[in-house]
Image 1 (tube, rainbow, N blue to C red):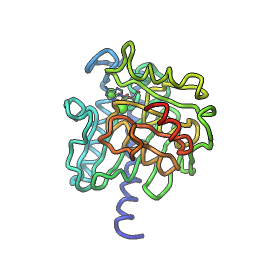
Image 2: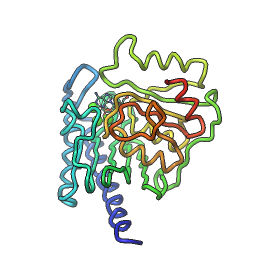
Image 3: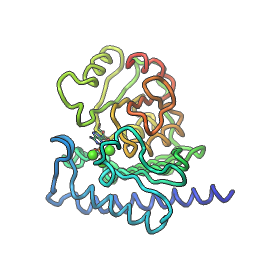
Image 4: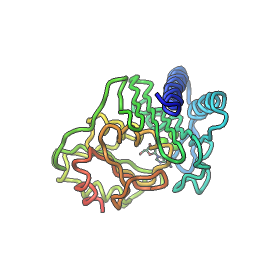
Length: 272
Ligand code: 2AM
Ligand code: CA
Ligand code: CA
Ligand code: CA
């Protein structure tokens, strides 16, 4: 094994340790009365558990990798410009963290939320770890190293046509209003696809496509911490992820379209 591969292998193993530690913290706090704060509006929420999970993850990374940069939702998400661009030095290694992805589910005790860590080298996502501490599902992926659920290889589904496709989508907080684009898009899917789900945690939705449960997923207005981990896992499982123009998705794209690859073009055609 060459030196870089061994170094990145250790990063990946450490990321797994960190998400499990954060998961334990979240599970220890899950039954405590929650302090819930609104950020931009009534559906953009943060709890002290999000903040404590993020602090734990940042502490571990700063301790073990003081020369790596970190981008995380509750520290960096307030900036107006964080929406579209990855406003961090992109040279070297960086950690992109969502301390709880699916905060609304967490608040409502629905077991579909995760801790998500994506690691990039010179701006390119190379490792992803997504952990659901309630179900104990740990998804991981390494560029050119495969995708795994609890250590078992996973692959995207084999649905050949939209008619067999189960899709997911979601709302960014500002799109939760009448006549929003996503409502209109869901309308266009009716009668064409098997069904559409809105499950509320983009990182896990990408992993559900990676493990062949969902056929595809689309979402507007996501941030790097929602997707940095999931896109590596999905690509390694044989999936395709693009922007709405069909070009390979990058962390500064706002619209993400993901699928089992087979139905990708058909899905884009309906969304365009
Ligand atoms: P969150 O739970 O970490 O906020 C829901 O469709 C998905 O979109 C979740 O992954 C959710 O992440 C993310 N999301 C929606 N609105 C968001 C916002 N305003 N800021 C950050 N993430 C958002
Ligand atoms: Ca949030
Ligand atoms: Ca998120
Ligand atoms: Ca979050």
